[in-house]
Each structure stands twice: as structure tokens, then as C-alpha cells.
Amino acid sequence: MGGCVSQSFIDSLSGARCILFGAGITGAPTLKFLKSRGAIVISVDEKVIGPEIKSELKAEDLVGVKLAVVSPGWRVDHPLIKVALRAGIEIISEIDLAWRVKEQIAPNQRWIALTGTNGKTTAIQMLESMLIQSGIKAKACGNLGYTAIEAVVESGSDILALELSSFQLEWSKLAHFESVAILNVAQDHIDWHGSFENYLAAKLKIADLADLVILNRDDQYLAESGKKLSKKVIWISLQVPGKNEIGLVENIIVDRAFINGDAEALFELGDVTPSVGHNVSNAMAAAALARSIGASSSAIAQGLRSFKLDHHRLEVVLTSGGITFIDDSKATNPHAAIAAIQSQLESIWIAGGLAKGAAMDELARRCKGRIKAAILIGSDATIIQSALLKESPNLAIYMTDSNLTGIDVMAQVMGIVKNIAVSGDVVLLAPACASMDQFKNYADRGDIFTQAAKEAFGE
Picture: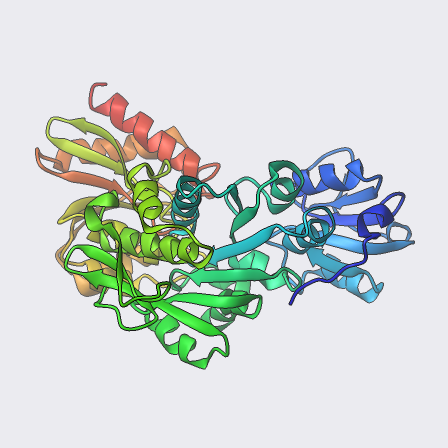
């Protein structure tokens, strides 16, 4: 059970010297909360520049500091983290800070959570929609823009549904969840975690913080890892479900886990848009979490029918001259790109950027029959090129100038598309890589893709 705390925790912040590692998106709401409670905050960030932001810690900065809050992305072995630890300072995640505050100001609030390599934001938004349709006062938060500390302080919700990244889980120890789900695990952030084994361990850590664990049996790593967990496990899969499972029977998702009788229909495949395999798995995980806290099957189906995918997720942004342009810019790793590519019979695939240490061999092997041509961008384009040529030596591959940025990248891409695309083609941006070498972020990359497509194809 996480985090029994003194009722004086919030009061203890008044006048206390605290360190905040990270002055970015997650750090700003944490800073706001700490200051609102009278804390004297030392903000530390090596990338964000500001008059009140330090890039290093000196001995005088550490005097009297008892607590530090760390934003996602800071490695445990970072030199500045080590400085704080050597000084005897307690370091907690923003999630654990939110939990401590919740224990004091909203002790009856219940938390559920999910993680995974891909589909987290889609699944958590599906879950929020299901809970709201069930008449439950719920709020999705965590890794999707609305932080946990904001949700605890501002939302007044009975249920918080948290989307958690491996970075957040690496640091979190106190928070406790009634139920959690892991959607999938594939190579991602290997450069940060050091190895796939460490990354997998960070994802599985969520099980240590929960009473009930929901796992995707169709994922090879979860199917194996789930056998070793000491917690109760509910399995989801695209197969016919056994007892204590949720699965697929013909075109209906059936619950055999959270019922008194034998089985109950939750939703039809047609309730999920798009009803491709990975998205149905997202919906099943969300449904299992919703069922774990009492949502009705009718509310789950209605929640899915009223749900729309977020921007930059298999988003059709233009159809012109019989050519369809799809923005899946949030596919920032090979696993997500595989799902996007396999959602189409064939596509002209735009990919590349920063691979973050991930290999592209599995993608090339699994998708070789679905790629009509590849247009590669960014710093690690040659990694993708090598993997594709190994599996498909005759595949048409077009390399772009990796020194370009922003609109110039996509203008060059659209020049190639104009020469090779014909009516009936799908042009799919599913980069399998991060974006920061040529764009501000994945959303900027997707927006510029859309802009360039419309400019090049006459809209």
C-alpha cells in the first residue's frame, strides 16, 4: 500500500526549501502547487533557460532542503540527482507528490492507471469516456498534458485515471492503484533505460503499486512476464476468452472476468473507430479498467461510440485526387509504426527522425508486404533504410536531406509523393522515431505534414 502520510505534510511545505528537477510541462504545475503552499522552490533544468532556473546545484542551494520533486525524464544516475541524494534529500516523483497531497485533501479519491509502449493516451481517453458515461466523476491525467497534481488539487473527481510513462514509473513508489493495465511492451527509450530489460522492468513496476493487474495476452513479453506476478491478473486478448478474461467472440468483446454469471457482451467491434487490432486492444484494456471500478457494459459501449481519436493518431488529414494522407505522427517508435502500417493494405510510408536506440528489423520484417515505397527523413534514416533493404531489396526507398527542418522537410517529401503517388494510394506518416531533430515535437511534425500536403495537392 503506498504512502500513508502525516496530516501535516501540506502544512510542512510552508517556508520549506524544496528542489524541483525539471521546469518543463510537468514541472510548471508542480512549481505552482509548491509555491501556493508557501514553499521556497529551487528550479533546476539543463535545457530550460530562465531567470529563476538553475542549471547546476551549489552547496548553498542544498542547505536546509529536505524534499525534491523530479519531473519525468530525469535519469536516476544524473549527476545533479546524485548531488541531491548525497546531501540526504528525499526525491519523489510528481505522481508521488500528488499521492501525498491526495491522501490529505481527498482521502476517498480512488486511483487507477495504465501504461504501455503505445496507445496510452488513446486508451486513457477511452477510459475517461466510459466512466463519464457511467455517471462516475472521473478525470484522465498524468502523461497526457493534465498532470496528477493538477487533477488532485483542481478536479474534485472521485476517480483519477492516470496515464503513466516508464519515466514516471521509474521514480514512483508511494502511489497506490486499485487496478492497472499494461497495454503492450516493445523497444522504446532504450537510450534512456540502458536496455530493453530495464525498460520492461520499469513498465512492470506498475504492478507493484496495484491490487489488480490487467495484461494483454497477445503481447509476447506481457504473456511471459504475467506468469511471474504475485498480484491477481485479468487477461485481455483478441482470442476467445476463458474464465477471468476479456476477449473476442465473433465481432463482440465479451467479459468473463467482472461478472457473476458466465459472460456478458461489452461492445461490438463496430463501436471502436478505427476497429483495427491494436485499437480494439486499447478499448479492451480501457473496458477492463472501467469494469474493475463498476462501470456498466452499456456505458462502456456508449463511451466508445462517442470517443474520437486524438490528433496525430491515424488521422485522415486530406484526400485529394484519390490519394489519402494519414497523420500518425505520434507513432514515435517501431511498435507504434507497425500498428499504423498494418492498419492499411499498402501505403507510401514516411518515416525517420531519432530512433532512440530502437532497432527497425522487426518492423521491416513484419511490414514488408504493406509498404509500397518508403520516404525517409531525419538523423536515423539510414537505420531504417538498412533494415528495409535487408528484408525487401527491391523496395523503392527515397532519402531526404537530413539537414532540413520544419516545412522544408515535408515540402521535399511532398515533391517525392507527387512523382510516385497515384489515385488509390495512401500516404502514411508513421515515423517510428522521435521528432526533435527536425521539428519541435511530434505534433509540430504532424501539423507540418498536413500543411505541406494541402499546399502541394491544391487545398
